[in-house]
Length: 333
Image (tube, rainbow, N blue to C red; front, side, top):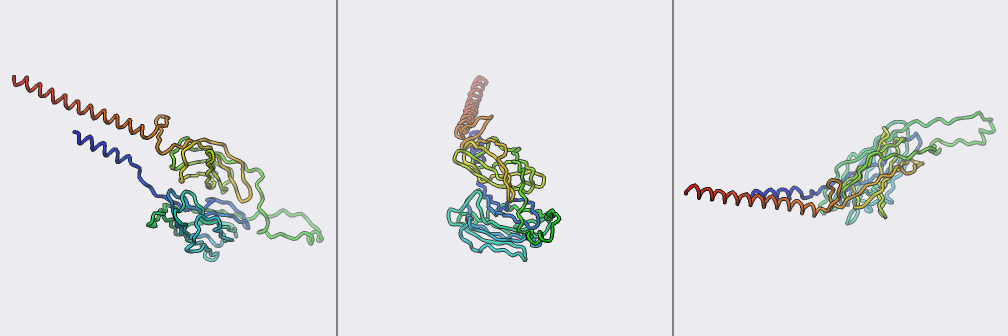
């Protein structure tokens, strides 16, 4: 009987041990964008990892008839050494690179490259990863890439400029400006986004999901997490339905956080959204019936309960044996 109880205790302890997970993604941001012919956009290629990584490599493709690359910048990249220098081809519609960073590597959200592109004609262009790898800084070069996030750019025809009758002299004095050099029209009423769903309580170094809405499909959303001197931000995009979802997988240190968001296109930025609040619990604390208690105290309660059950079982077994012996003596008499 005692052996069975010990096996249950050991099995419970083994099931309670944390399981190491390795996850990394490579993303193009913003995920959704709306442009007019002749306009340009700045895209960022980033990695998001839950553990230190020290190398990235990828090949991207894009429709060369709709988009063309203007420039690629690695100035602010977290990856400082390049096995293959970033390069692009507007003929085949490809971008490729291979970069590394010395020990101890980088984790959470890290910038890889900044790409500037121009819209050539109307259509929908999808930039996607044909091949990619993110290698862990574990001495073995383990590929921890679990997924990639492409980007979709919808290009619309440019709006025709309004014209007024002019005299021949006025036509000579007013030089025409090519469409490619004309600045995009700024949005004069750029309303903040609205955070609709969030977590009141999250676990330290665990994922955090923020959902919201915005009137401006294709714009970039920046979500801010603020706690004292800590200020962490991440970006996502508003989809064609006006919704956005940001998943922060890099983890947040324990503390009380204020969360808000802004939306931005290529030349305008909104004010702050509604403010929400979240408590991030330390990994050595758990929440039970609305109360945050240390993990050690939970284990103490569990051990006390198991100890009590074990004591009751042994005591009951001893009493039954005593009763049997007592009954056996009386029976013989």
